[in-house]
Each structure stands twice: as C-alpha cells, then as structure tokens.
Length: 180
Image 1 (cartoon, one colour):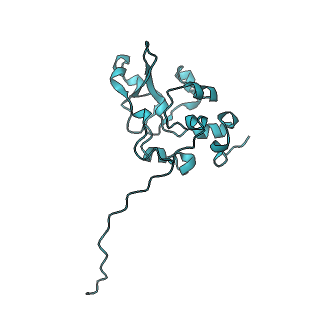
Image 2 (tube, helix red, strand yellow):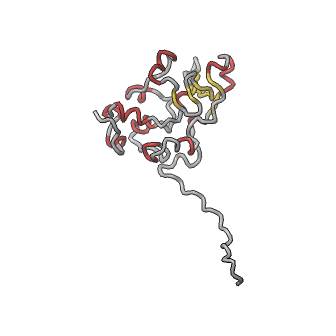
Image 3 (cartoon, helix red, strand yellow):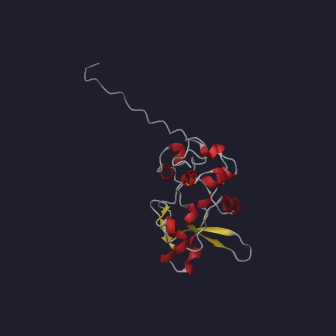
C-alpha cells in the first residue's frame, strides 16, 4: 500500500481500486456534504441548508473530529464506493462523484492545482457561506435556511482548466526622468 497518492490516480483507478491514502486525498475539502440536508417526508426530495454539521469547521471546511465523527453524529454518512453510487445529494463538484462518473477533476481541486486553498479561492467551498452550525439553531428554524447554491458551481469553477484572468489594465509608460 502506498503512503503517497500517485499522480492522476483518479484517471486510471476506480473508486474500489484506490488505496486508503488515495481515497482520503480525493476529498476536495469544500464542506458541501457537511451541510445539513432536509428530506421531504412525502416526496423524499432532498434540500440543502446553509447550516453546517456541528463538527464542521466552517473556515477550514473540514470535520473537527473526523476519526470519531460517526460516534458524535450518528447520521454522518461514511463515503464508500457503494454510498457514492447510491447518494443523489452529493454536490455535482464532488470528486468522488466525478470519478464514479468517469469524469476528471476540476482545476481548483488540490490534486490538480497542488494547493488545498484553491477550492476556497474558486468559491466552491462553504467558507463564508455557513449561517450557523446545527446545534446553534432550533430544528424548527432549519426550513428558513434552505439554499440552492451547494448544487451549483460558481462562475469559472465549472471549467476543467483554470479560467484565464482578465488582462490587467494598461498603465501609462513610466517616464525616464529625461525631458522628451
């Protein structure tokens, strides 16, 4: 078993073929799956809220107690290849979902960009978008926090390659100090 993921392993391996290090590295750190979701009892439709799980570090967009999360949050879903295939609420940007669908990762994913902060700079993560953590609000208030943005990608984030930056404004040429 390798301790370091090999370059572009997600393009050549299925979810089942990944070793534990590769599997864990696939998480893009967006925190979208850690938002509370509500399910309609009649239609079974899932709706996202802007409320984070009680263990979500809403700045770092990671679980504050990942090894013990299921003991503290019994309904926390442990991702496996089977659950990735079964869950229809995984965000469209989720690397596990993308790999399962045979698609490449986005330019902002740390395995592509080489920087774990790119997911935040691209506006994909929940950083700055979480209204509260679930323990901070009464359950009856959750309905007031329904949002659609976790199922969408910000402009420019959906590209497979980093979007070209806008050209810098032209500046007047510097003067040499000599009279013309």
